[in-house]
Length: 444
Image (cartoon, rainbow, N blue to C red; front, top):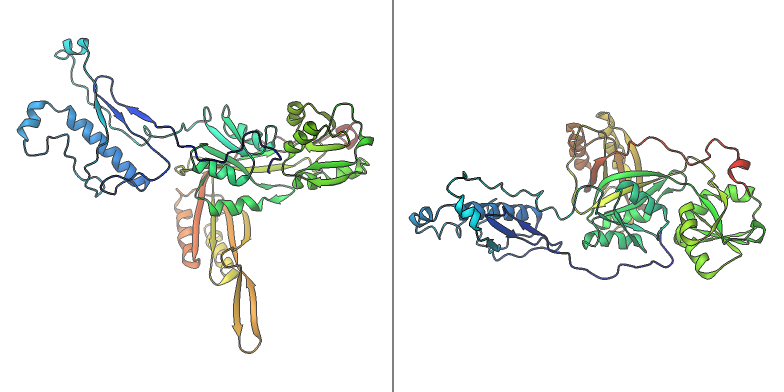
């Protein structure tokens, strides 16, 4: 859901901050920069994550080599000085200058060097070089909309204490993560009443981000207006198209003879009314949006169905490691040259292994939207080509899921795993007033 006037839209590339890795205080300091763009070393290593892990091993090897006594290195005279020679790692021979900086020993350390036993330094691991924390605090999370949007609430539920970054478009939220402006993105993919958000399914295929989690947020719509405005004065209601659709029946029951007008965002609609002092216009948004933009709540809980839930996915640059100790969900997308006839075979691969599907969605194949089939007897038939998105309840760490995808790959011309991630197992928390009567739920 897009905003009308984002407070600080993200439009330019911001280079990431260098991350400095330091070794033991009395040994060596390792200084290394991990950027989102490819790293070009003299020998061509560093174009992917595997090469980066190789570089980590090389760093650790250099540390161990420089910790050896000087007389030992002198005895190996023709081995390039010990620290300058590192064996091939992962099949790569390297001679990179990775900026090892010796640290001078203090007087106390010199005096006690003969007493304290030698402590071997712990090798570097990929966790030490992680550019962002794995927990919710201090994470920068991009969402679409302005403060007060439901996406902001979903970001706070997914990553408590995070720094929420508003973006004016879904596309900008994807790019914010890819360009290291944000660590995660939380974006909606489907709603229990309005259905799928097709734009985000298309963006999932276009970008190379990974789904690392999901969060389900109950939606509680309110009818907002400027202070002092009564419902009789309202002749226009603005909000996001899905919010308008989710409240259509309730608005009719309220007797509002007002035109419906779609805008880009629910909270953006409230912001627009407050900024332009529109006393004849109401917005459908959250109660938090009313607090942020100084508006009053004319009606509370106006969604047609109190069981109104939006499902959001959490996106990251790197996938998480699948596990089997908790319920997992896996999302895939596939296509086939022969059209939809392969769908039955794909579904049977999951049914045979007792894997439950939670969603199946078809989207037009943008590169080849129509397939022509020539028949000399009846003429030329035109068939639409589709991409199929499927969510199923299994972890990629399970053998049955691996075997199912191996069979699916035999039938398809394109297959991509969008992510294998923990399911949202939080207790059901419906919107306020679920068991209340309409008159109690919508007072004036």
